[in-house]
Length: 228
Ligand SMILES: Nc1ncnc2c1ncn2[C@@H]1O[C@H](COP(=O)(O)OP(=O)(O)OP(=O)(O)O)[C@@H](O)[C@H]1O
Ligand SMILES: [Mg+2]
Image (tube, rainbow, N blue to C red; front, side, top):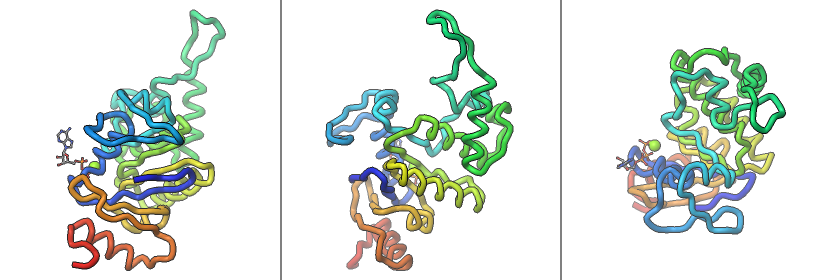
């Protein structure tokens, strides 16, 4: 599969088809047994997640992967905390700034939530937005999103889809895994169907009706194919 800058690639498939596994390989969580990953014009090998992150690949995990006992701001800035103090040897965490910046990025996602509450006390949708905010703060070149809308209310889904459009305008490449066909059709340029770990069909969205696209996805996902 391939995705260009400023485009969104939708990945669909039945439960267990391998979508999350695919994204985890691209983000350095799993090592591939075979195949190649090319980013821009070079082949990359990610041994760990940090390698992928340094190369500009960021992932929003299906299970969100947040630290339950830290607050929203601490989760968003985990691993690249804002600091104050100029000394090379000695600096303080700039909590005020992290909370302010966290509020700003959450607000851009249409959400007002306390950034000083432990994440375990937040609702499912709020946690999902914290995970999205965290990924955005890294300013990735390639953003992998595994079911980012699953827990969101209708208006928050609209905000997230709008955000995907804005990221595309900024030149970010995205891969979106979702079971919600309408969301995929709305924001994706291309869609790939995964069946038992193989891409069995790939097509452009432009110029096709929602009905045709939906039928094609359903048939390919269940292994019926387009002719069967
Ligand atoms: N860590 C693991 N060790 C062994 N098998 C795994 C592991 N993670 C996933 N699998 C298996 O690999 C297959 C693909 O799983 P994966 O999570 O990629 O599916 P998925 O397409 O994301 O499904 P869903 O739509 O339910 O999220 C499944 O059969 C799953 O049981
Ligand atoms: Mg999955």
